[in-house]
Image 1 (cartoon, rainbow, N blue to C red):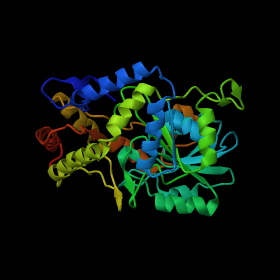
Image 2 (image 1 turned 45 degrees about the horizontal axis):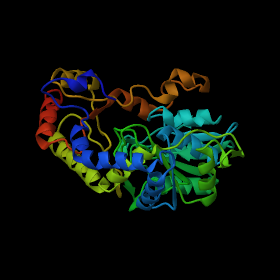
Image 3 (image 1 turned 180 degrees about the vertical axis):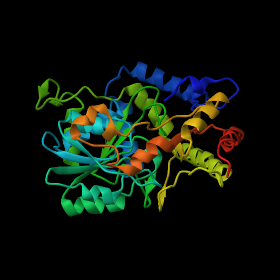
Length: 376
């Protein structure tokens, strides 16, 4: 996600975590020292406390910390009994890990189209793809924008399907007054450093209100063990680091401020980009966008990106090729034109700089350069 264009001198970086680190440094160092002095480095008190605090924040009964957002998806699918011969309906407009997790458990991803405004999976397209092998729906709250969980939940109940939320980019986002991650059978989060809630390494979390699912997740993350050296199934070595958990506890206490700051940056963009020849992000109705990314649609996306790069402004192209048309899924038989909305988005979307410490003057600089390629 970071590249050379993000380090051009005198411009605006796509992402900067330096100020955040300086603000957290004293507490972070104390947390490292405390963990070291305790001698508890794996599945220790910070992991347990973070699980409790994160579950309470999300609105789920339980949370299970794991090594990454990808692992969160894989373990959730396994815990729900999804595997070979099963199909999972998901979006092709997402990071590869979403579909990859389905493949890794031996199931088949079935790709649905997305909504042009929200970029999220289209419930009508989901309904069209339900078949006898469908076991679950895997929506992605893309860029921090909550998917239509009301409609998706109704479809799932009608057909007896599981719902697994890919909330990797959406910690703190809300749908209908409830936080994402607590709206399906499992919610999957990533704590990669670029995320709304990020650690200083890899990390992930699964939220659920099903005690049986929680118990299986606890086994799966630790080699399928029920107690030391006693194993009931093959699992994984997928445990959130104790020191990262300590950092996440510090940052979780500030999460509402972080989301508010991102939403303020988005509001600055919305105001300054209004009237230009582009389409701004469309927050889901009745929800709260967490703005992990601020992603616009532009008819001359590549020219705009080159122009911004020339002026030292970092950007990211999420995503240049939809998953259903990538080589890894050629065997599924999708063809160009099968999912027209997502295919159009992949030619038009561009993510602009956004992070909590981005200043209004920097947003103004970005918008000035955008306007040079996008007159109204």
